[in-house]
Length: 360
Image 1: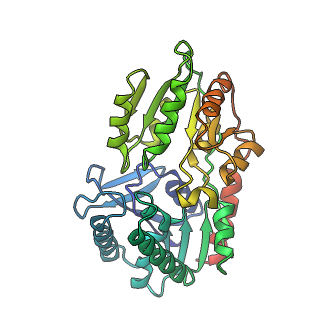
Image 2: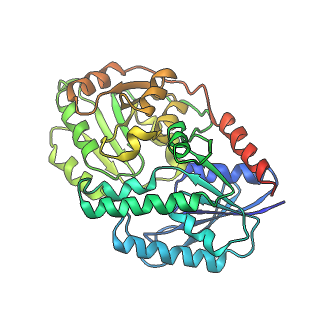
């Protein structure tokens, strides 16, 4: 039995990928503790989910969004983890912002789990900012340098794996696919859902404008659930669209997902191409979660996520900015059901093969 410390820079409430992989480790007889960052200091400090212990570190209220206060808070979080982690047989670093922890644990094998192109996030608030471009470039360089010292690397998409391979780093793809789940009855009224982090306004402005083009008698309801750097702005934006029925809610737990899915007809998962990860390989977990519950998704056309969506029949794709096409897609999906044919079983095998090679 190995002792494994998984580290993630969010509150792990929910982070299905982190919990899922930790659970796979415990099923192999390993002892796993997830160290999470309770940025808003509103989550249980010590909790067990699916048999996995989560310790949440509090180092003062820290916002999301790539600001200096976020960077300083992250450093305090990593220091807190380093002080409390104790001797372990494997350090499982979720995303690039936790990789600096490996420096204080030089003799410990490191599994780098690259969920995303983390360095692209700092550019989102101002993509053309020279300062943010420089910071992003430095973050990318630091990530690649640290990744080269990792014992193994896994990524959440083929696109990200190819991005690493172009930079002489090998990785194994473990996608964010859940188990097939119960498919609840569909609501009588056509309802669009968005469940997850709210990091940009543009996606929702695009959605609201498209829904306004639908005849009032057919116009769907919209449910948005989640927190994030732009949640308040999205709430204000929604309130300005007085002709729409938009319900904006706060964060939710994974246990709430089935009830949330029962309220919607389809999942909206479109993002501005200004986000560097969209064209490089991002696969939204919400697309897989929705299909696991029988709900189709609408995603960006001509992207890796769009290719997966179309090839597996998980929904439809729409060109970014084409509000009429989005409106037509929404109406066209009414009464449509999706099926997740490839679920977490394949990903579990891939993950455990990496774990076996680490020989912990």
